Length: 278
Image 1 (tube, rainbow, N blue to C red):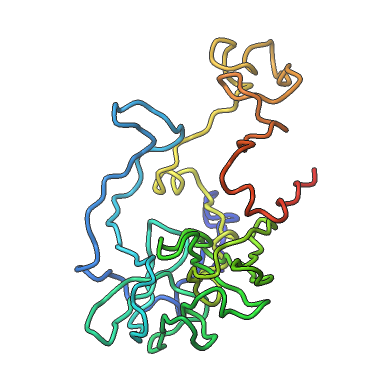
Image 2: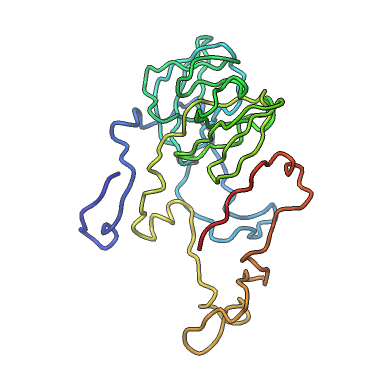
């Protein structure tokens, strides 16, 4: 982490991830980047569907490879780069057949490292293999939910999933939330954990940096008028005044179960994630 001297109110307490010694280039591979239109919380009619989004610095989209279709074709890591569209770092890989691709960079990956995707290979960070061939206790990331469906699980900075067991065609995985669920053993996963594990320790320091990231201000409900929010109104500062916490549309948020009782994946969940302690 990089900490700053309090030369201004915004620098006091500010901390960022130190990229020196980790990232190797400053500009992305042009053939793997495209322009992108950010949603900024609007639907196809231009109406706000997600609040507190909008603005932010212009970004170019890096085409990340989440598929495991480079079977038995080794690749060499040529660079480790920053991606403004995700929390983890990305790595540019040159494959032996001449193709270039971006992948999610695992922790401790270095330029010159060799990676390989195969049904069974060495337990080296970045290598991809079938879940049924990964030993119990191994940390994995970039995990598929359906065979050849592309990686869906554990893609954020510093995240990993632990292989707990293999049984009857399924692999039991312990999620970062503590939930244990079954995934088909013919799905692929990458060995290791996602890079940039210090991402959650950063402190933005000032409101302006939130705006650069496309995050707009959040107003407290108790600071609004009664017409705008259930918590609004009153002389001076008031409590929320309702028995249970609600959204500005009156929907209960605290303690209500939101998962559908007949969700298709219920049968695949072995242990629910533990409740948060207050």
